[in-house]
Length: 355
Image (cartoon, rainbow, N blue to C red; front, side, top):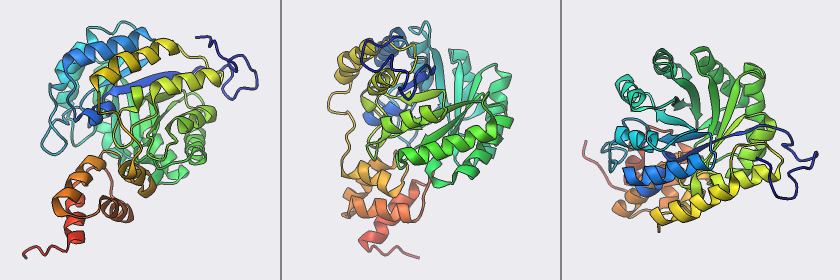
């Protein structure tokens, strides 16, 4: 789409002439903001608006992916498959994606999602555990799905190690590999280092993506830096819905891409309307904000979905939310270690457990 704003036709603009795809995760990562309570009607309204606004990929599942509805991660208002089916019924042009975390989602969950109409599966692992994605990537390929390797908590390893893990996913059949700032802990130069390393290792023909959280307030800046460094697809969510302080806001990202001279299929003004007229109404009082807790997630390098669990533990044991997060950061906890939140809270409260 040709942008109507100053800068779009500036040949010196950082993304002048670059084609960038946009993936929206409002109906997956954004589910964290509403405690996974999206209903089929919400999905139809939001997915239909995103599709009409020209977004390329729309992701729909529980915030923790297929199979995430559970006591540990929070129960969804409606089954993932019902939500995927609702989205499939209104999406005409965009690709429909689902997230799958090995150990939470199973191949059976993937087959059900495939039968419900997904086009893409994004298989997510910790940034040092790409090898546990192989079975799911192979299974997705057998189903004829487009595949994405999603390297979460990418700030926790250096560029070369991240590139090695990306290579494992590529060799297992991933069509795209993502640098994922799950903690919102990276700054633009750190994003650039990782994207460039992955690009150098995988080659220019491999698609690379960027998923940016906003816990240090740099979500959109990080996505733009990644695009300038060579990624072909960037994630966002409307109004920045998502775990912690949320993600790069899709409507802001689209506007910034226009101003940077990038070519996208997104109709930015229509996307802004979807954010304001649909998402803001559905999510009244639940839009993410960059407050003390979410800022400390980025500062300490903690997985963004830990925030709600930390707040509950702090209230239950009468200890500081900030102290819990900082101690979790010192222990370098990762996704799947949510039980450590309670352990740390109990220790900080000075509670002696029986032997």
